Image 1: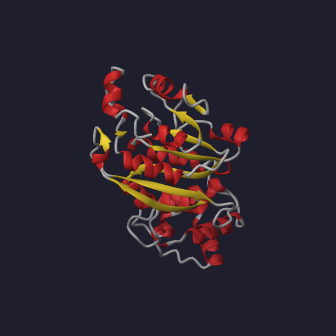
Image 2: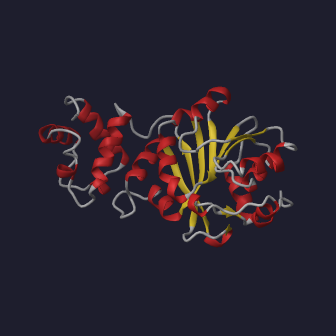
Length: 283
C-alpha cells in the first residue's frame, strides 16, 4: 500500500511522538516494508501475528497480500491509530492491545492452526520475545522478525565462531534460520543507533536433534555459554555432579576440555540425553 501515509505524517496527524523509552523506531522505507511482507509470504487462510504493529506500515502490506493479521500493540496510543487507519477497510485485521513478550500465541494457534509471527522488535525486548516463542514451537510455523543486526548474526552463527551462543543453539534446535535482509538505520523514523536485520526462522516438524527434556537442554546450553572461556568440565558444574557429567560426556564422545562454543546442536542434544540416562539433575 504505497499510498499509506509516512510515519511522520501519521504521528503528526494523530498528535503523537515516538516514545524513546519504549525504543519506538518506525519503519519508513517502503521498499523494506514490501520486502518483509514478501518474506512473510502468508498462505491462503493462514493467520499472521504481527508483533509491535506500531502505526501499521507493515500491517498494511500484510493485509494487502491477503493475510489475516492479528496486530499486537502494547502502546494504547498507537492501537487506536491502527483501528482508525486500517480496520474499517480490512475486516480480516484484528488489533490486540497486549505485550508481545507474554502474548498467548498458543490460544491463537488453537483457533487457527500454527501461525507465522512477524514484526519489528524493540531492541531491548528482542531476546525476551524470542525466549517466549521458543516455549511455543507447536504454535508457530515461521518467524520473520526484525532485530538488531548483531542478534541475528549470533542466531545464524556456526559452531566455533565468536558469535555462536545460546540463541544460536536453541533456535537452530527447532528451526532453519537465515539472515534474510539487512536494514540500515536510515530506514527508520527516528533512526536507531544500530543497524537491523531480518531473521527468517522456519520451524521444523521435529527438533533437529531429540532431547529428553527441553528444560534440561536449555539449562545445559545456558551453562555452557555462561562463561565462555571455561571448559565444559567447569562450565557444566551447575547442571550436574562432576562424576555424572564425566559419564555422560564419555558415553557420547564429547571431550570436556572443549568450550561450549565448539559444540554443535546435535552434540548438545546428545549430551542432554546422556545426562538424562545417568540420574537426577542438580537442585
